[in-house]
Image 1 (cartoon, rainbow, N blue to C red):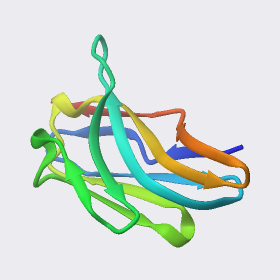
Image 2 (tube, rainbow, N blue to C red):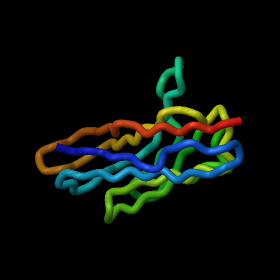
Image 3 (spheres, rainbow, N blue to C red):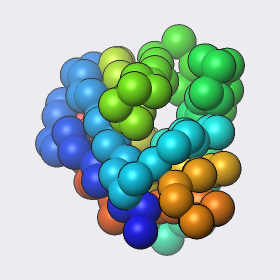
Amino acid sequence: QVQLVESGGGLVQTGGSLRLSCVASGSIFSINVMGWYRQAPGKQRGLVAAISSSGRTNYIDSVKGRFTISRDNAKNTVYLQMNSLKPEDTAVYYCNALGVVAGDYRGGAWGQGTLVTVSS
């Protein structure tokens, strides 16, 4: 069974920084795309950033220039460095994996989420 475990959330003031980490475990052979989604209160979950196994990245416009996604394929880990945080970044951040190959498993996975709160 594939598991994703996030860490690094917390409370930060406007303009501050946080680094989220997500480790995938479970006899993983490869993961195609890893990404971060977020869900603010009363809103739908949406993509923040994603990175392919080759390092190609994609960001939503509102975080470009402030957030950086990276991954360590050897450690099955994805990171999200968040700088210049704004109150509108407040949300539960979820790690996502697509195209997971792990034993007989083929599919995706979600983490349990980590809360990021940005105070004004």
